[in-house]
Amino acid sequence: MAIFFKHFSSSVASPTIGRFVPANLSPLAFPRFTLLNLKLSSFSTSIAADADADADADAPTNNHQPSQAENTYAQPQNPLPQFLLNECGLSQSQVSTVLRKCASLQKRRSAETARQAVQVLRESGFTEDQVRTVIVKTPDFLTVKADGKLKPMIELFKTLGITGRYLVATCKLNRMLCSSLHNCLIPRVQYLQNLFASKDVLTTVLKREPSILQIEFERRMKPNVDFLKQSGIEGELLLFYLSRCPKILCQSTNSLKVRMEYVRNMGIPPSSKQFAYALVALHYNPPETLKNKFELLASFGLLEHEIKELFRKCPTVFNISIDKLQKNMDFLIHTAGLPPNIILTYPMIVHFRLETRIKPRHAVFKFLSAVELYKPVRSLIYMITMSEKMFLDRYMKDSPYASRLLEIYRGKSVELDIIKSPLLQD
Image (cartoon, rainbow, N blue to C red):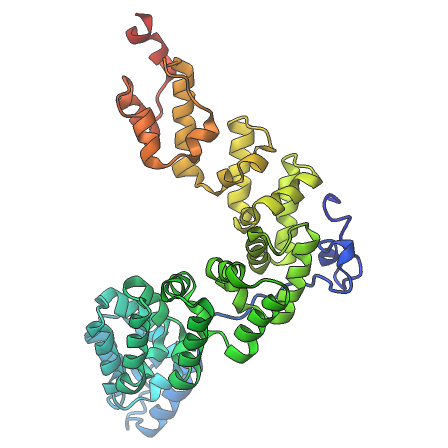
């Protein structure tokens, strides 16, 4: 449909993407965003090739050709599979995954380095399940020397307040484990400490987005911060940007420039905190996905200027998946009977989970509205957005229909024959 995109430039190579760009965005066109490759690296080669080579050297005289599984697990010169099976509790399929993701482990003649690395995690408070998670997710961890790198790295994280599940998440970052401790990781931490000027703020940021520790300092982190400062985003505003939306540092500077220009042309000034959230929305949504969300909202009756207003007011709405956005809007409008533009006044309503929040509270609302309690029932929006404790205290506690309300809230279908109850006939 043509709504919302008629103001976007047609000068971009892809006609679909071109409709996303406001006409006054030229010459900084809004290209198809390529999300930065921040996935965990994997070094995969063929297990079969190494297995066949060993099989040729040790082939038995009866010409029996060992299977790939035999080559992988039964070769005495590589004790690592047995270590993973017996001492770490991995399944055979998990061991296969580990060896496939990190081919260098197939050629190990000793499991001592891996054993020491695992011991460091255990001494650092990791549970056995967490140890297995790190091994399967980031098998290169088994090649890291315990005393030379792993111990100092974990101690560094602990001094920054990264412990518990946050430490587990940080240790699963493959690119960081493969980086030099003194040449890469420590300089990044020192730069971030100086930038945030507060250990507590830095700790919060690292818990929210530990992957910023593996951003290339010279190519990404520092150029992006410098560009934000040049654009007038400094001081407390810069700290807000980076503490709430650290993903800003993960993209290339060119992509950051284009997205900032796009957000400006949507009418959000850089001095607004919503500007940072809009940048993140563009980071997570390729142009085609963003276009589909705009068209989905239009299909529910929102007008062009209303969609723009929604983007300016609450960009985080566009971080919701298309499936969730469609189901929530469909229920709120076609079942609950709310007007489409209710999302402009209460944009957070579509963030809630449909099955565990919106539907149960809508059922309670219908029941209370039908029996016409002495206390007037507030709006459905009010009931959906209040906290769980407040909701239960207000509508369940001390209610003469508490048991029925709890049944309704837990998903049990209750007919409204309660209207004929003697309680209401008195």
